[in-house]
Length: 332
Image (cartoon, rainbow, N blue to C red; front, side, top):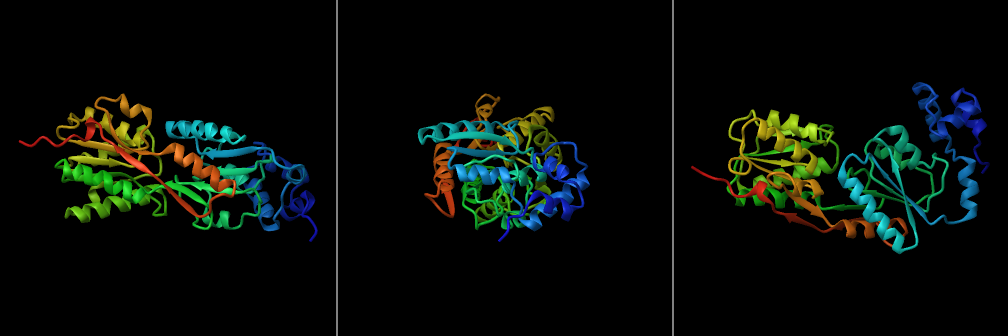
C-alpha cells in the first residue's frame, strides 16, 4: 500500500503543504478552523510524518514520553520524578510533555504527529475521546494512567478509585460523620477518576445505611484549589454538612480555606479528606487526611506495560493516610 504523503493531506484539506507542516509541528500560526480541517484529513488518510518513518528505521531511542495535562498539580510533578527514577534504572530517559489538557496537543502525542520518536508513551489524557484512541495508527506503545479512564482496550494503570473512596467514607462514618458531601464529581457524566470516586462514595453511603442527597454533591472537571474553595462555599450553604470527601487534595486544600472563612471548625464540626497525598497536605492546619497511591508501584507498572511486559489493566495499592482533618466528630 502506497504511503500517504503530506501533499495528499494538503489536497484533502484544501490547504498548502506548508500549512500541513505548520499543523504537524504545532506552530501557532494556523487558524483553528484550518487546523481542525488538516487534523481531520490526517486522521482520515492515516498520515504519519516522514520524520517518524526515518526515526523508526533508526531503532530505539531509549526515551519514553510522559504526557500530563500540567505541572501545576504537585501530583504530576512527583509522578514525573518517580517515573524518571524508575526509568533510569532500566536505562531509559523520561521526556515530560505538557498537553495543557487541550485536544489538539493531546492528539499530536496520541497519533505521533509531534515529529519525534519515543519507545513508549505514558499518557494521562484529559481531553481526547475514546474514538480518537480507537482510530490511533501510530505504532508507539501506549499506556494510560488513571486520571481519566477512556478505553479498556489500551493498557491502563491506576489505583482502585471505587475501593479507595469506600475506604474514605467508611473512615468518616466510623468517626461519627453522617452528612457527608462529595466535591469533584464528573460534570460530563463520563467514565473518569471523578466519576469512579463518586460511585464509591455512593456505594459506601448505602453500606452505612445513610441516605444519598444530591444537594451534597458538587460536580466539576477542574480540580484546583480555587475550585475547591468555590465549591465548598456552595456545599457548606446546605445545613448539617459535617464532612466533605474531595476528589483530590487540591480541592481539599481549597475547601479547608473556605471552611475557615465561613467559621467552620475542622475537624471539630467538619471533616475534610482527599486523594493523592501531596506534600502540601502534611503542612496545612490541620493536616489533611488523604489516599496515598503507591507511586513507585505505579511507575514500575506503567513502565512494564509500555515496554510490553504487562497487558490490560493494572491496579496498584493505596493506603489511607489519616491526619487531624478527619478526627472523630465532637458532639454536644
